[in-house]
Length: 318
Image 1 (cartoon, helix red, strand yellow):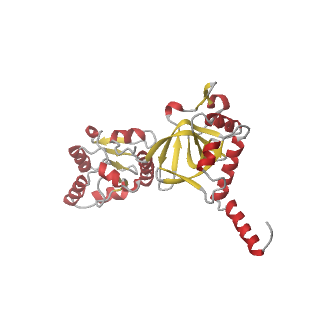
Image 2 (cartoon, rainbow, N blue to C red):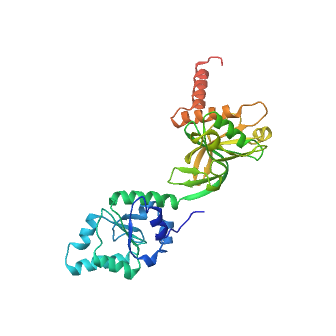
Image 3 (tube, rainbow, N blue to C red):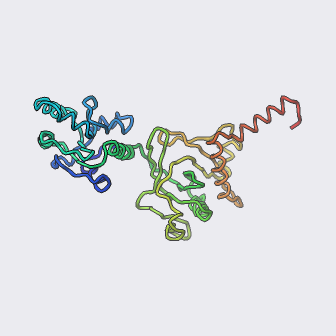
């Protein structure tokens, strides 16, 4: 479920220490929010935060040195008219950056219109970058998937499959081989841009791995800080299946890479059959290494097909 609201109070508290900003005006409008229609229609966070602009309403307006100069360096009547026009933009918040002081007319306008106004010494460009990154994640499409999410050889890998196939045990073995745990059982996924999905662990399950017969394991306490990760970008799904499912639903040698749609983005997928005696951890690491090669443009299957065609064209026996 994609959130479509964030209040001025939440925004202020999220960056109180980071931007060291102060709340100058509009204290009574702490629940003022971004316009929901504007949030739904925004193609990116750039549509929600920017420099003072009379053409783009409903977004957080950032006022740096040039914007304040525009509002103050004119006749008194012109300055009042320019400041009054800000009300028509219906901004959720105004942010004074570059250490700029608030003109008295602007302070009065914010109090009358109940528009929260923050002030920070940080540069306007930096404030815009910070707020855009925050809003991009806050308003991102999201979903929760069942599985074990891991950092394997530097790649974010989600291990999925039917219950009882040993996903958590596989995760534990991969941790002992030097890989890192992001989340077990429930993985929160966020679409942070048009091509990227980021996954992290719900706070309730942080650092925990549940293994049948043993119970809950605190991976960070047992294996150390380097055995856990805060978040990773999802690049590969490893799906575990039983022998009969593999034979019924999948090709042994697929002609094209498998993908699975996650939040509207195709993610590369590998299917591994689980049977007694197979070292699944080694197979998963091999699948990850092969995926890395594919992302670099090296397609082993296509190379084999090309060899086969050349051999057939030359009339050699295979």
